[in-house]
Length: 637
Image (cartoon, rainbow, N blue to C red; front, side, top):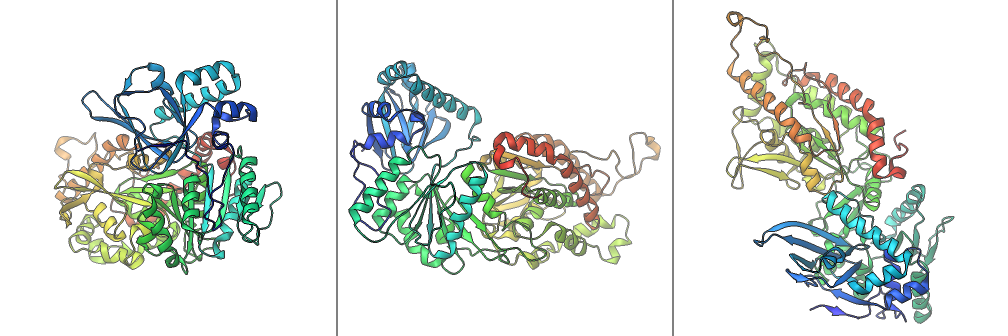
């Protein structure tokens, strides 16, 4: 049942059972919504008087299917799932409404029952206003009409973007298990200020040092509770139009305070370290038991030593939430990638509503060019938030996400995939060597030297691998589980190797259905996708035969070379399909290399690196259209 006109405000942010008691609840709620931007307090008070506060617990439904809309809803806090059905009752589309948005205006304008349902995904608070009353306020107040029109335009834009728009969380809460992670909030303030923001900070850190030009408020843990509550209340009123509020607080507060903060927050960063994460588990699990849906706004942030390539598995923290970040403020050791250092920038991406995905395509040995692409992106400060790989793209991607440096990987591939002398003297020895590697299960021990028994969810950067199940006939996307298995399944070429039978599935190379998995990243929430393809072109030669070779002089190909050539041709033809969802494509020309020439990894990596470096200005230009302050200058320079 939906509760209306109940008081709803964040707790005092200290261990007090009292709630903030405001004389004008709806006024403050409305002040925090974009529809009141640049409006006078008098006008906001007038509009708020026409609103009703609606609170929904998870699963509650303020709008049933085929009911007519008579009101406009302004989202203040929380997350609502909006589902559109066709006339047969089938789901046509789903999208989510979050803080700062509106819904109902377009449906109410139609004046007919809408085949749409709204369900609360987490504790949510809205302001409801009668549609005709809203029209009257629009006609009476041009400023409100302007803000309302922008909201309608943003609704239409969000529909057009199909989930690829970027939502910027306004109220960000940073919880700390210990003082060691307080450095994160300080770094956030510095970086957001560099990005032309003016964050406002509310903290219980008694050692907080003010930043020039940054409004802050230090919560007193002692003294008169009533006076403290009043001071916090006044700050929330004063900062009601702040575009970014950081609440920096110890997580050892009362359950009631924690619940109130989580309702108020748009995004939560739950900070832990190697030493203290287990101390967070009880409080963390209690939060998730308090209200379903909150895991969608919580991000676990691991602050790790610079030489820590693999984070703890910690399913108690990592599994419930949608995202976790691994980062370090220490310089990584030699032969380790910048992935852990760049983890902080991935947090910034999250706060700026940006998520960059990199799709690495299949192509056997030609995928060694991916190592150069990864190196060039890293050198130029293009931080990737997620990687998806097929076949050799999964292999290079998973190894990179584990913290292995690209140039070092080049050397390791050359050494590990050098054919023994017997294969080097055989005709087509490279093909026979690959067959031997597959048939005798040599890839697993080769990769396990570096990845040990680590799982995908432990790696520095989120990564997905693509394989195919021959039983269901469907692609299988791995985002968790044994990292070596994720690779060996994805590179498992049919015919050269038997299907890998595991958990009721018969798994083979993902390239037979999805060779460049840009769509996987779009479906995972990336709003800018870079596709790296090493199979865009093909050398017009096979078994020493060319288009101009007379029939009588054409040579017969071996069975194994025919199989591998078929694989290459398939990849080339699937390439255009795979890269279609991408916003930017990197296609190094490495068609002169055979798909078995892993020992030329250094040459292919250099071509991948050179190709990417040439494209960096164009890539940065496109990224600037997404967020100019964030990508206007290179942090890699």
